[in-house]
Length: 283
Image (cartoon, rainbow, N blue to C red; front, side, top):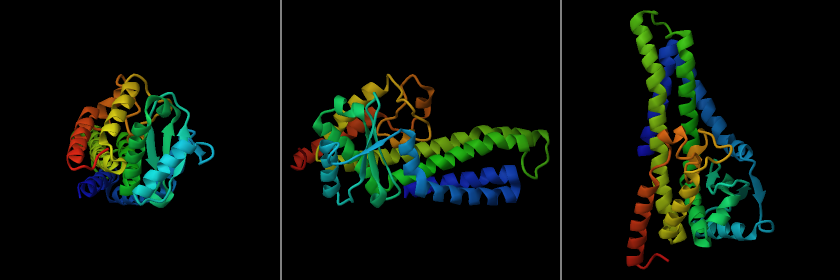
């Protein structure tokens, strides 16, 4: 319900920005653009992001350990077997993509295997498969696309005035406020969508792997690498997809990170592990 509310808020914001800069015609145009953009994201987002990071598909022969681990978790979670990809990168990280479980893919970086042990990798994969199961990837992609077009329209809209409104001083002030506040609001809503889904994937991933502590350890290790080095090729539009924000702590993009605090995520996972152990459900 919270995600539905936030996505509705993004759509309303998109329409309001269109209305301000283009009047009724602009509002209708933004509705059409929103629908077209969502349809395009639905069908093509996975192909685009995998190509962007030069991900290479692997199978049971080329990467048996990784493939079989994904296979076991998918069976345990009653999910179709996703495609498995490896990204050649010196920074450990992972993401899932795909419009639905039947067309899903899981990608991990080459550095992940060197940085984590078997249980921790399994925890990361369980987290990503949980995103697939709950449809988070499509939601996050659409939210990022809508936030991006709101920002672009707000910046370019000032060059074309405020629709049918008179170009007086008050209109100029409102236009300037729209240019600054609309992208900020879109970014905040996108962050709220992404962060709420990360907490859910952590919890579900801990249940799927049966070892929330291993996922917590994995998050700490990945962050220890990521905070010192931005992942090569990382962009703001795809940052929400990764299990840990791919930007370094020194990078200003961390100011509006789509990820919740790692310390908070770890604390929740530790509490989950404790509760599972007390009930005999954890490893």
